[in-house]
Image 1 (cartoon, rainbow, N blue to C red):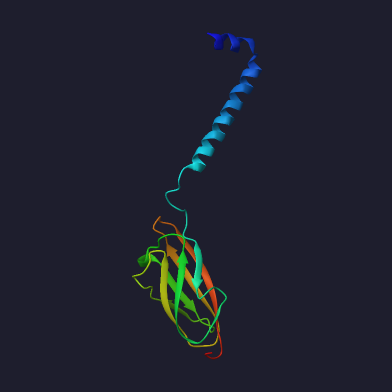
Image 2: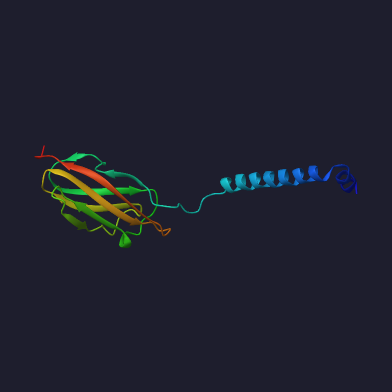
Length: 142
Protein backbone atom coordinates (compact mmCIF):
# COMPACT_ATOMS: atom_id res chain seq x y z
CA UNK A 1 0.00 0.00 0.00
CA UNK A 2 2.86 2.35 0.80
CA UNK A 3 4.26 1.84 -2.71
CA UNK A 4 0.90 2.71 -4.26
CA UNK A 5 0.74 5.91 -2.20
CA UNK A 6 4.30 6.81 -3.21
CA UNK A 7 3.48 6.24 -6.88
CA UNK A 8 0.45 8.50 -6.56
CA UNK A 9 2.72 11.29 -5.26
CA UNK A 10 4.99 11.28 -8.30
CA UNK A 11 3.73 12.53 -11.62
CA UNK A 12 3.15 10.49 -14.79
CA UNK A 13 6.32 11.86 -16.45
CA UNK A 14 8.38 10.92 -13.40
CA UNK A 15 6.96 7.40 -13.53
CA UNK A 16 7.93 7.07 -17.21
CA UNK A 17 11.50 8.15 -16.42
CA UNK A 18 11.58 5.67 -13.54
CA UNK A 19 10.42 2.83 -15.81
CA UNK A 20 12.92 3.61 -18.60
CA UNK A 21 15.79 3.98 -16.11
CA UNK A 22 14.81 0.71 -14.47
CA UNK A 23 14.71 -1.06 -17.84
CA UNK A 24 18.12 0.34 -18.76
CA UNK A 25 19.58 -0.76 -15.42
CA UNK A 26 18.09 -4.23 -15.86
CA UNK A 27 19.67 -4.44 -19.35
CA UNK A 28 23.08 -3.43 -18.00
CA UNK A 29 22.90 -6.02 -15.22
CA UNK A 30 21.82 -8.71 -17.70
CA UNK A 31 24.70 -7.85 -20.07
CA UNK A 32 27.20 -7.93 -17.20
CA UNK A 33 25.98 -11.36 -16.11
CA UNK A 34 26.19 -12.67 -19.68
CA UNK A 35 29.78 -11.41 -19.94
CA UNK A 36 30.70 -13.30 -16.78
CA UNK A 37 29.23 -16.59 -18.00
CA UNK A 38 31.83 -19.09 -19.24
CA UNK A 39 32.04 -19.36 -23.01
CA UNK A 40 31.40 -22.88 -24.32
CA UNK A 41 32.67 -22.44 -27.89
CA UNK A 42 34.72 -19.92 -29.78
CA UNK A 43 33.32 -18.34 -32.91
CA UNK A 44 36.17 -19.14 -35.31
CA UNK A 45 39.44 -21.00 -35.47
CA UNK A 46 42.21 -18.42 -35.23
CA UNK A 47 45.74 -19.16 -36.41
CA UNK A 48 47.98 -18.62 -33.38
CA UNK A 49 51.22 -19.28 -35.22
CA UNK A 50 53.09 -21.56 -37.55
CA UNK A 51 56.36 -23.47 -37.70
CA UNK A 52 58.21 -22.14 -39.58
CA UNK A 53 56.83 -18.72 -38.70
CA UNK A 54 55.09 -16.55 -41.28
CA UNK A 55 57.65 -14.53 -43.22
CA UNK A 56 60.50 -16.93 -42.41
CA UNK A 57 63.30 -17.81 -44.79
CA UNK A 58 63.93 -21.55 -44.97
CA UNK A 59 66.47 -23.69 -46.86
CA UNK A 60 65.36 -25.56 -49.97
CA UNK A 61 64.12 -29.12 -49.54
CA UNK A 62 61.38 -30.96 -47.71
CA UNK A 63 59.81 -28.99 -44.84
CA UNK A 64 57.35 -30.06 -42.18
CA UNK A 65 54.95 -27.17 -41.62
CA UNK A 66 52.72 -26.89 -38.56
CA UNK A 67 49.76 -24.55 -38.18
CA UNK A 68 48.70 -23.89 -34.57
CA UNK A 69 45.07 -22.87 -33.93
CA UNK A 70 43.12 -21.71 -30.88
CA UNK A 71 40.56 -24.53 -31.20
CA UNK A 72 40.17 -28.08 -32.43
CA UNK A 73 40.14 -28.48 -36.21
CA UNK A 74 38.22 -30.97 -38.35
CA UNK A 75 41.23 -32.29 -40.27
CA UNK A 76 39.17 -34.27 -42.79
CA UNK A 77 37.30 -31.17 -43.96
CA UNK A 78 40.21 -28.73 -43.88
CA UNK A 79 42.46 -27.89 -46.84
CA UNK A 80 46.02 -26.64 -47.26
CA UNK A 81 47.69 -25.74 -50.54
CA UNK A 82 51.03 -24.23 -51.48
CA UNK A 83 51.70 -21.64 -54.19
CA UNK A 84 55.26 -21.79 -55.54
CA UNK A 85 57.28 -18.86 -56.92
CA UNK A 86 56.04 -19.71 -60.44
CA UNK A 87 52.41 -19.48 -59.12
CA UNK A 88 51.83 -23.26 -59.38
CA UNK A 89 49.42 -24.38 -56.65
CA UNK A 90 49.78 -27.81 -55.01
CA UNK A 91 47.30 -29.34 -52.55
CA UNK A 92 49.10 -30.75 -49.50
CA UNK A 93 48.01 -33.79 -47.48
CA UNK A 94 47.19 -33.02 -43.85
CA UNK A 95 48.53 -35.59 -41.38
CA UNK A 96 45.47 -37.29 -39.81
CA UNK A 97 47.08 -37.89 -36.42
CA UNK A 98 48.58 -35.49 -33.90
CA UNK A 99 47.11 -32.80 -31.72
CA UNK A 100 43.55 -31.69 -32.57
CA UNK A 101 44.47 -27.98 -32.74
CA UNK A 102 47.55 -28.40 -34.97
CA UNK A 103 47.66 -29.18 -38.69
CA UNK A 104 50.83 -30.82 -40.00
CA UNK A 105 51.83 -30.98 -43.67
CA UNK A 106 55.02 -31.82 -45.52
CA UNK A 107 55.94 -29.60 -48.44
CA UNK A 108 58.76 -29.84 -50.97
CA UNK A 109 60.22 -26.36 -51.35
CA UNK A 110 62.75 -27.00 -54.09
CA UNK A 111 62.88 -23.62 -55.87
CA UNK A 112 64.27 -20.48 -54.27
CA UNK A 113 61.75 -17.65 -53.99
CA UNK A 114 58.49 -16.70 -52.33
CA UNK A 115 55.88 -19.32 -51.43
CA UNK A 116 52.42 -18.89 -49.92
CA UNK A 117 50.74 -21.56 -47.83
CA UNK A 118 46.94 -21.16 -48.18
CA UNK A 119 44.78 -22.72 -45.48
CA UNK A 120 41.07 -23.20 -45.04
CA UNK A 121 39.97 -24.92 -41.86
CA UNK A 122 36.72 -26.08 -40.38
CA UNK A 123 36.65 -25.70 -36.62
CA UNK A 124 34.66 -28.28 -34.70
CA UNK A 125 32.11 -25.54 -33.91
CA UNK A 126 31.21 -25.45 -37.63
CA UNK A 127 32.87 -22.18 -38.67
CA UNK A 128 35.25 -21.98 -41.65
CA UNK A 129 38.22 -19.64 -41.61
CA UNK A 130 40.91 -18.99 -44.21
CA UNK A 131 44.35 -17.47 -44.26
CA UNK A 132 47.85 -17.48 -45.68
CA UNK A 133 51.36 -18.04 -44.40
CA UNK A 134 54.11 -16.54 -46.60
CA UNK A 135 57.52 -18.26 -46.68
CA UNK A 136 60.72 -17.58 -48.58
CA UNK A 137 63.10 -20.31 -49.71
CA UNK A 138 66.76 -19.31 -49.77
CA UNK A 139 68.98 -19.96 -52.78
CA UNK A 140 71.00 -22.70 -51.10
CA UNK A 141 71.02 -24.85 -48.00
CA UNK A 142 73.01 -23.41 -45.06
